Length: 78
Image (cartoon, rainbow, N blue to C red; front, top):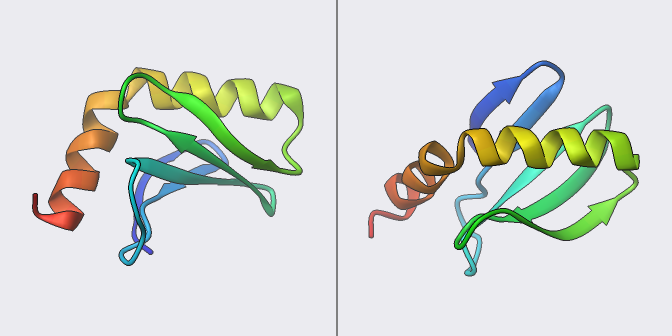
């Protein structure tokens, strides 16, 4: 599972054997959220992140949306 983006204490990962829809796994202080990144950024799952940390993760993903989408495409060579 390559880490494709780090910002502060947030690590954004694309698992190499994952599935659609296009999404990233975000880790922060041992907690995970899954964000879909196909048509904007949407929270799919949250496993213990605080609302504040989740908002920060979404903001980072929105600011880097094209990069995250390009990394997904690169990993899955579509």
